[in-house]
Length: 100
Image (cartoon, rainbow, N blue to C red; front, top):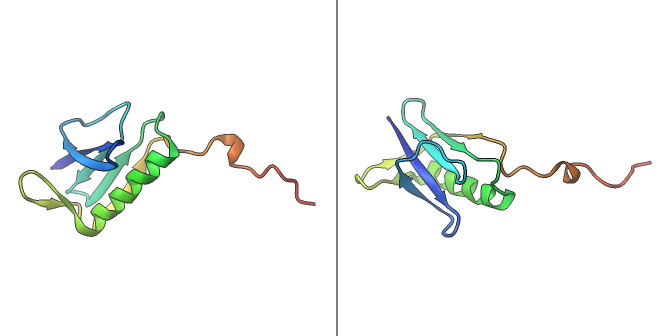
């Protein structure tokens, strides 16, 4: 059974949701069968937001996420990041200086 968490940019925290996909927010799937946290990052998400969500996801791996049913899920799982959001622009991926 999978549980889904949505990243709230204003609080920098994950909250439980019924959404399985979103075009405007980061969704974290806690997949108990595969022991994975699958974070889906939409294309419009910036680098700072993506990094904040990754930090929160890594803390969930250490201590788990306390859900409304009282269970703690996600502890000692593997993190997998999907999506193209939060990447550096192409112009910033290369050094502007020439090395002689």
